[in-house]
Amino acid sequence: AQKVTQAQTEISVVEKEDVTLDCVYETRDTTYYLFWYKQPPSGELVFLIRRNSFDEQNEISGRYSWNFQKSTSSFNFTITASQVVDSAVYFCALSAWRDDKIIFGKGTRLHILP
Amino acid sequence: DAMVIQNPRYQVTQFGKPVTLSCSQTLNHNVMYWYQQKSSQAPKLLFHYYDKDFNNEADTPDNFQSRRPNTSFCFLDIRSPGLGDAAMYLCATTIAGTADEKLFFGSGTQLSVL
Image (cartoon, rainbow over the protein chains, first blue to last red):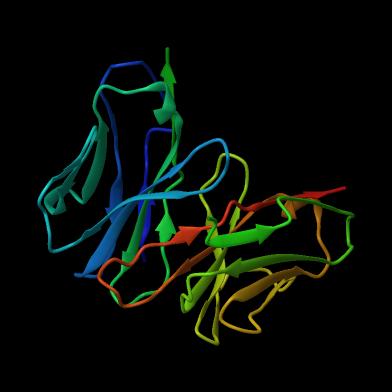
């Protein structure tokens, strides 16, 4: 069975602070994909990143960075120098290789305070 | 330009009155999904089509049906909506088997049941 756990239900930080969103996953598959999606108040889920299970390199994209550690089954997401526009619900998700299904965690609601 | 289009954005129906939600895509993707998202919860996969092959999740109620008459369109039919079916319904697409596989989401249809 696959499972994604986002233990942080809601986080509030002041603008310009760094914030890390945690994601822990469970899967029996040896090959799988991990995702992060952003859901702003408008409701549409926006793709942020996809990571293959065999690629443990950390990734940085502007103010966003992702730390993938297979040893702890974690795929954490850090926003550096947060901005008010980063306020949204962030979902971590998992799919197995050759599986069409993507399973989502419960999401973390992030508030960036001005 | 929107690539996954869901209509209507808001839908109100009465308890027990059948309702159909629609999704269309201009991406020519072979996989289409329907997710149900209740307030402050993760999107929950109801079913998906891989080309014409329908894949129902084991815990999707029989009250929910789907049709995919062609590649571009997919419909979600709720035969007898109950109060518990009030939710955001998200349509998503992907093209399976590509290196950059990710879900493209529509803006969702917010369903209210009176």
